[in-house]
Length: 256
Image (cartoon, rainbow, N blue to C red; front, side, top):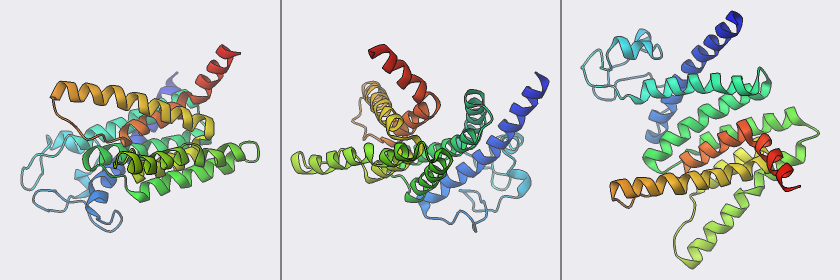
């Protein structure tokens, strides 16, 4: 038990470090800033942040959520994303075990977390993040080769083609987009990762979550919010990644 606890602590620490990088993606990609060469800086005064103020979770607590130089408040997004990524990694390994699939799923979770926050704020999904998921999907396809080859290839098209048809049909019939281009690319890349069965489940889960939560938001606020579909699709993808095969097998047994 002690060894298992220590292992999960290590996984959590690794997760919050990667979560710190996820914050870099969230803050810089919408502003078209380089994520590799630009030094971390205060968003208010522009002062460069030293390494000892970049320790995940710890630095935020020590600085009491304020910039060391100008005293401006630091968004709670930073520790929340770091903590979410850390706990997410622990949860993934606890469910999937210590496998290559767990490692890839953790990386998928980090990218989906960044996508969810960015799309929630800007209604855009950076193309580079979808490409990254596609690369993870390619690696997953290679790992599952040869048994799952066609499962992954069909998954790339299974939902994305349907969404693309709906997009053009919506423009033709009602003059509006049903889905964003980033949403379609996301489901294509995630379909390569999950395979066709799980990506269909992910899409259905995302649609249900989006319909319910968005309706509640509009009712509570009284505003006609524009729907950012990315966060709900991201949640559906993670549900399918963790429990998709179990749920599908349960459904098949229920029918037959």
